[in-house]
Image 1 (cartoon, one colour):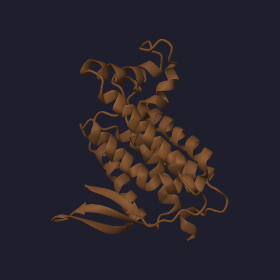
Image 2 (cartoon, rainbow, N blue to C red):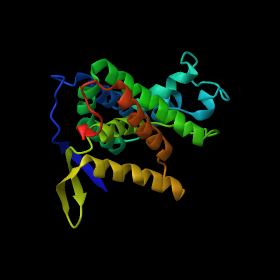
Image 3 (spheres, rainbow, N blue to C red):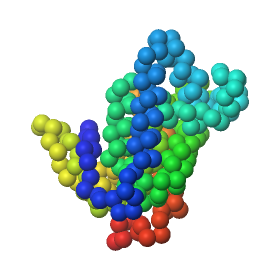
Image 4 (cartoon, helix red, strand yellow):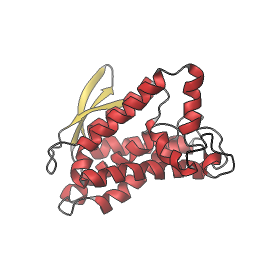
Length: 227
């Protein structure tokens, strides 16, 4: 529908967002390891390290004996189904994550990202209580980053690649771009979409990001861009 290309929001507090780049690098590395596995092993990795509600709830035993049941609430966020799934998540994280790391600080940003991943997974589990399929992907954690961005920098300009007649880059306020994105997540939930997309994980991560941003941000960073 649209893709963010870059924003015009300068960094003010950190010289280099190495946590954000590190998360991107680690996620890509995990997928590269997945990609070289035989098809059967690829599928098994998603079962072993994806978030399966009935496993986290201890209804069904953990496939990896040494891995605690709760650990997949984090590990799932570093697995992806294919290159498109990976690159779309990493593009959003690349565009929006650096400014959230800038607003929170390095260590708090890492805690924030992990917390959003966990809360997104728990939201998914709450609405898919008896599901035996694995949840994978960074979408929930990235949705948290987007939620933080909309409450901290709603007026920042984001250049998005929008398809009108032909794909063209358009500058739009972050509030409208991210607001439209989260509205589509609720829309697909309400119509009962059968697409294999974890809509509730996106919503849960986004809401978590909105709430946690207000708690984790630096004192000098104003909510709503100071307006």
